[in-house]
Image 1 (cartoon, rainbow, N blue to C red):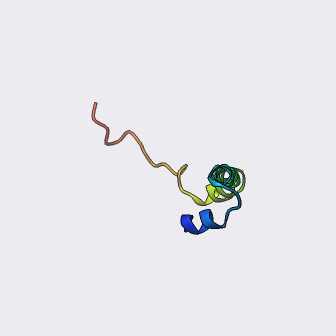
Image 2 (tube, rainbow, N blue to C red):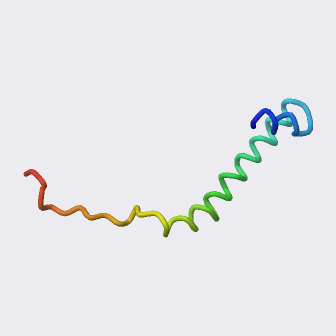
Length: 57
């Protein structure tokens, strides 16, 4: 998959590396701005049920 993307990017190796970096940053931005906030209520990370009943002292 990455080879296919690399072959289809325009320019020489430096231009392709720069474009790849920009694309990766764009994906990270979209994930943090849109995907993760949308998925956060669906994930059970805040549903903790830890109490002190079985804790050793």
